[in-house]
Image 1 (cartoon, rainbow, N blue to C red):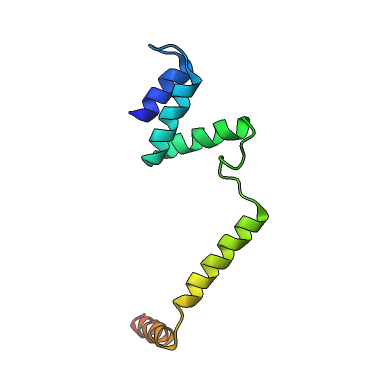
Image 2 (cartoon, rainbow, N blue to C red):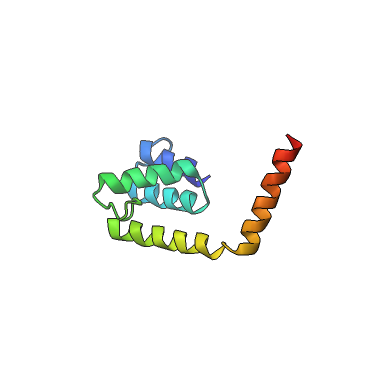
Length: 96
């Protein structure tokens, strides 16, 4: 519903055109998980020079996120897990 309301406020269909209300409803729809609203909101923020709000991140932030991801992957590694993976791979080869 919020996404549709944002569209009405954007175009001024049935309501007075209102950018603040459009953005409010886009934000609510995006928070609710609507992918189209997230895209439109990111485009709106980019066009208005607010790249940080549009989902653009710095190289430093990206590197930190990548390090965090790698640490999480490494935390799942163990000799027992690797042995189980090798066992299941052998089983798959024997069945094919």
